[in-house]
Length: 220
Image (cartoon, rainbow, N blue to C red; front, side, top):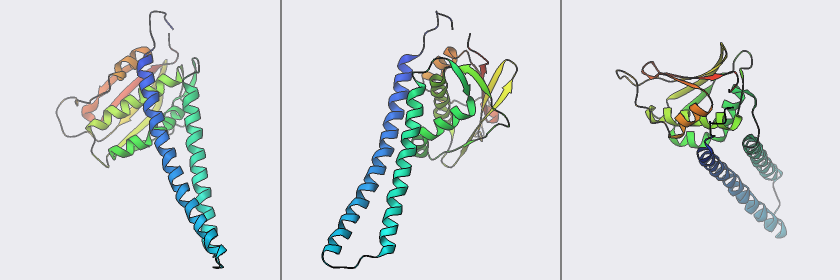
């Protein structure tokens, strides 16, 4: 990569902080449910101490509920671990579909707050680029967040990838509100910084409900 190009570190720190806060909120929700189940288990123990017969069905249900929350917490931590390690990796070959899936997973709470549906389309074969995984994820979220500013609750944002000559394309598709010309999508300030850093190209077809991001096969 050219020495004159500086990585958008401040943008990355903000992104990392927002995602970490959202994930920690999810973990707190899991712990709250597990705490409720622990309280119920204590009630069962007290009842047994007083000679009240315990229902095997209720105990099985409690065990299953706890197991479900443990699996949920484990899945959250695995995703958080993948995301955290992406920040300290050098340039590498990145599967864009995997990057999109991770971003939509770790940012799902923020998407849910908007009430928008995000649908990811898996390509027939992997679409790869040699780039910086963390900043690609940051760019993807910047565009998801920006496009959501023109969507209504229950609208669907579709994200897919495609191989093109000398690179790859990320395609954001949505039902565009009826309006002449391009839409005034309120992208975060990070979006143009990340596009520049990643040597990417922004193609605005928002009037027809499409935004395209073209990434080089390898950053210069």
